[in-house]
Length: 90
Image 1 (cartoon, rainbow, N blue to C red):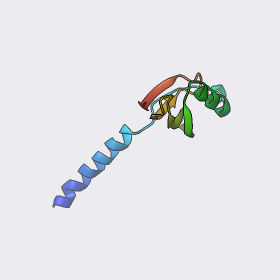
Image 2 (cartoon, one colour):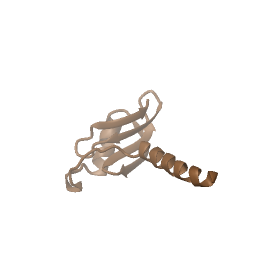
Image 3 (cartoon, rainbow, N blue to C red):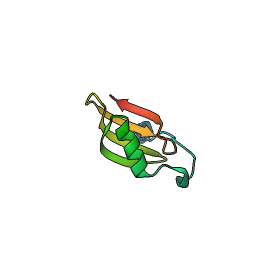
Image 4 (spheres, rainbow, N blue to C red):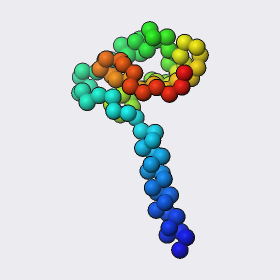
């Protein structure tokens, strides 16, 4: 009986935790309107960040790296203009 009750609770908790780590909504623009990855990387470097990982996450550019002070950051950027949409750390 306990397994019948616990399984749905576990599944609900897993679904909620997965949505908490989902990438934000950065843009609805088509990819043809995005900055190139090279241009975005340069923009990030020009802002003083170092890049450990650069990736496309949903409809965002996302980096893992360090800020000017050397603190770890995870940042989601709007790929059309390079503005920060969500930042963790730093």
